[in-house]
Amino acid sequence: MGSAKVLKRLGTLAGVALFGIIFLPDISLAQKATATTHTIFMTAFEVKGSTTSDKLAPPSVNPGDLSKGYEFKPPGKADKSNPKKWQVSSYRFSPGFVVVRQGNVVKLTVFVVNGDEHEVRITDPDGREVVAMRKWNRGREYKVSFVAKKPGSYQMACSTHAPTMQATFLVLPK
Image (cartoon, rainbow, N blue to C red):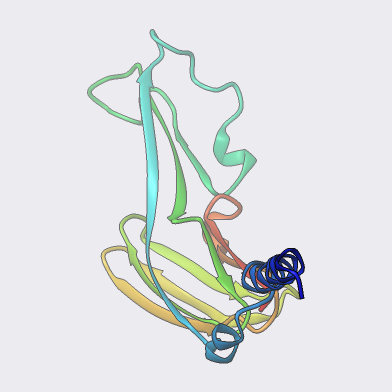
C-alpha cells in the first residue's frame, strides 16, 4: 500500500474518532447520570419604594386594587410625620427562576424576611401539588423538597401575595 493511501486511511480514522469524541454521547457520563440533589437557598422578601408627592404624584389607581401582591400607602399614611410621603411595595422570592434536570431532587431552604404570613405551595407542570400548601411566617426558615419527575415548569407561589410572589423551577428533560 502506498504512503498516500496510508495517510488517507489514517486521516479517515482520525476524522471518525474526532467525530465520536465531539458528537457522540459520553457513555460513561450517561451511566453515571443519577439523581442530583440541588440545594437552593431562597429568600422571601418585600421590595419597598417611597417618595413624596412634590417629587412624583402617587399612582392614580391603588396598586393594591390591581393585585394582592402589591401594597400602597398613600400620602399621609406612609409616614405620619411627612404628609407628602407615599410608598409602594411588592413581595418576591429570590431567586425567582431555577433550572434543574428531570429526576433531580430539589431541596429548598427559604428564609422569610418580611410579611407576617405567606401561604405557599409548589405545583408540577400539570398543576398538581408536589409540596402541599403551608403557612410561612416572617423571621423563620423553612425547608421543603420535591423530585422533579416531569419536564416543564414547576411553580412555587404564595397565594397571599399572588401573582408577584412566585418562583419557577424549569425542569429540563434527562
